[in-house]
Image (cartoon, rainbow, N blue to C red):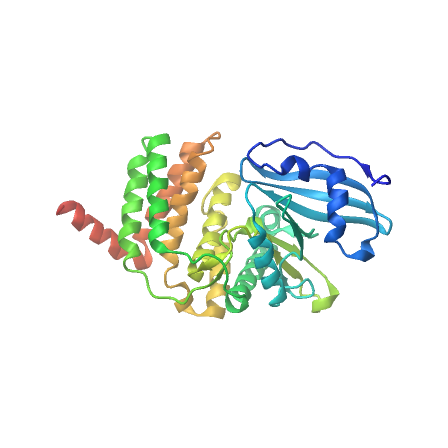
Length: 359
């Protein structure tokens, strides 16, 4: 493409993602992108790249800014270490099932997938991250955001097509056990708390209610939601968009609800100094969801909330930063608090009896 001019910002190198170097080559992109872009975008004349997020050895997300003969356009690209054409296919199914850009609740439009680059291309969404609203906005805006995030999830759980791996509790428990061991190995003396929390989860898992599984996001939180306001196509209600579909699956709906509510507690702990700082908005989220789906839809919520506390504690243990031990302990304590309050209280009694009368 002799007419293509290329420029790029600081990029990253990662031998664990074999196609990353090619995906970062503006000339390669200039040759490949026309196959998946709308013809009305015109001829590509300039490509500029900016890394947004990099998970070494796994994936890298970056913005692709295009100068074309019809103006400037932007895309979000994500390169994977392994072939993830399935993510594009899942997004296509969800988008066509009523989550298009002209709806109140949507996902980024999947633009295409380039298998030779392992590159997913999707619409760039303009708006405000829910995370920024929860951290910086007024009480009213925070409450409205919590409602909108809950209503998006209600719509998704009710209407999105089921696709992807089916969440299995036995595999989940095996993962949680590894997480507890990891904390024990890297963050002593907190290992005992982690192992005890896992023991409670193992008992609680055998007591879960039977709930119909539905489409799952996998990591639904304030970090994956963008809000755009004042758009005319839905009467000014605002536009709520959820992205990051790598972990899509079929699961108990409580898992996604738990991920969001515990995620608020974690960001409150790390950014606002108290795990309780955003509880009001977590409660708004949960009430909004229950009002639409009914209490049976959250019958297993406490189990998944406690499990996510253990998962997040292990995540923190793997990435030591100032105050990391205190944050791990706070998440483990929160997991135990969840067991001591509400529907899981009986599990603590059963665990105490087992400790007192070992086989």
